[in-house]
Length: 393
Image (tube, rainbow, N blue to C red; front, side, top):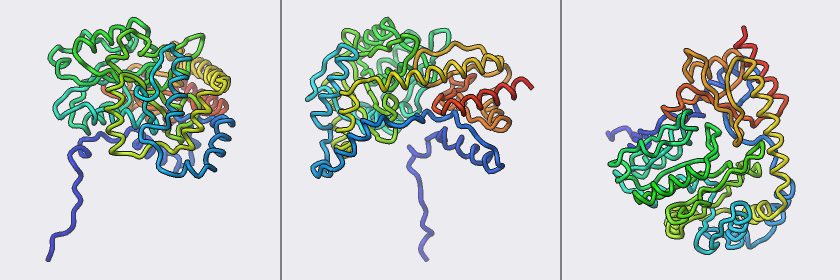
């Protein structure tokens, strides 16, 4: 008699922590099953529709028979040209669309593939903590070792590069940074990026800047690109996404620009793993990048109003916080004596409001929780009233 068939996961899968939002969704479903009207302020997924002119462009492009075939692995040259033109207008830095830009199936895909191109087993990768979980997970998948760079309030949620041990820096291949930052909402300035360039050049580390939120900014703030700093193009690559800028999260389209050899290394991974982004979506993305950006300004104004409203509710509930200048997140200190998990559980069970525990973004995220502003104003107002009621009882 043959042995029972068994399925054994690879070690890289066994090492994965529980996916943050899967656990939240399970608890949310449990509360909803009790008849509670749950307001989800957890996931950062824009609630507003993709602008109509971009949708119309997709409709037209989808009718073209030539777009139904395999696309270019690195992206249509016309799309890459639109991306570099947008970048030059926005940040004043020019790139060669033929060699210094690659299309992404959303920036998450490119970020996840970076360690496969440059990290060997045992190499270190410097990752922010708290930070987007993909940085560390992709590193582990490639056999690398994530080294956490704590982001602390006293440092403006910027990593302290001088605190990184020399022996770790010597073995590091990549450094992930992300500004404007998820989850903290922090914005980096020229001086910080200049220090990053100097550090990377000294230790021969490739800088990977996740720049998904540069266009979501308020109160006159104009977040800069890491690549605006002299020398940055020699040491790094920057990931941009159309997901948050144009409410296109489900479309899966983005691009990366930077050092030609780094871009081409990432392109080699893509050539062997995926078949590129649907060309009709690339054509719609060209429309988004080349069109008037008034739709983005209008969206930012909506988020600004939501931010101001929720900040006022939180202050009324007893929290002390400063309104962030960018992203659609609020990063809030826990009430004294409560863990991140405890406050997120309390809000869900007593107020029917989902918030994200800061500990889900890394050990240094303990002591905070995150609120996403991606729900309509009426629902956000209701969530704010519920939070105040729970904490004022």
